[in-house]
Image: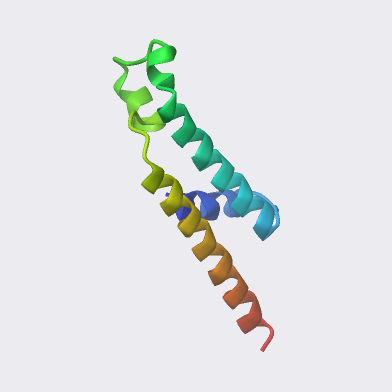
Length: 87
């Protein structure tokens, strides 16, 4: 998910690689934290299928780890791409 969001953000903005990657990571963390605090229920949207799909309902530390690894992958690939473009 974070790789797709990063690509989408970079497609429509002129943000630097680091700024875009950190922004996407913080967004993913915010969604995961909202799941921890059951934001869907707190907002009274527990019966809204759309809200449950967009915000999610289940918190997982594994998701946080995978979001971090996804952004790390993006940064490594962007670094590799930049070094290859120099040649």
